[in-house]
Image: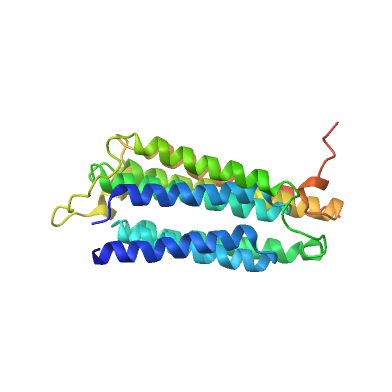
Length: 169
Length: 102
């Protein structure tokens, strides 16, 4: 067992453990805080995978914006949060069966794939992943159109969110 | 080094946990938390396929960034809807939001 494998196993245990707390925790504030732990573990995985820019974006956007938005939403709807008995619906065992079947099916399908236990090649020396990513995002030969569509989507979603949540009184 | 299969199994497990959360939670905000877990599982897959494939092709990372943008849009609209429903109907329990049920 090499050092990267040990690091991976620790991070994976943190991710799965905190994800379980997210879906089972009775107090929604605690669930949102456990979500931050999960997101941070995923950011560590990005760093391990040599995607440093995505690790930073994960911390800034997911933890800094989305998780905080969740905490605000939980606080704004707090009155209804704890007083309705169990947080899981009565048919939660059915959901558990579906989730386990999904996991089993995914693993079974992946095992049939020939590239399943691929080993990564080392990055070439002087490899500039961030520079390549920036070029790919604005190059007309690559991904400038999806990039612009994503920005229009964000604008439309934010205008829509303000309109839906606006208090007309 | 870590084989690709470890990342794929981790992301399958994270996706299944998120799916369980989406299907079994009563609170609408908690359902959105489960969706975030599923989106993160997808992103782990995209980035690990980028790293284990041809690293000069940036499609994996670009698509991961677009998933970030879609997740931000989804959570902004979703939470706005939850807050609006809470303001009008005084509930965030998904079972009780049934005015379109017939």
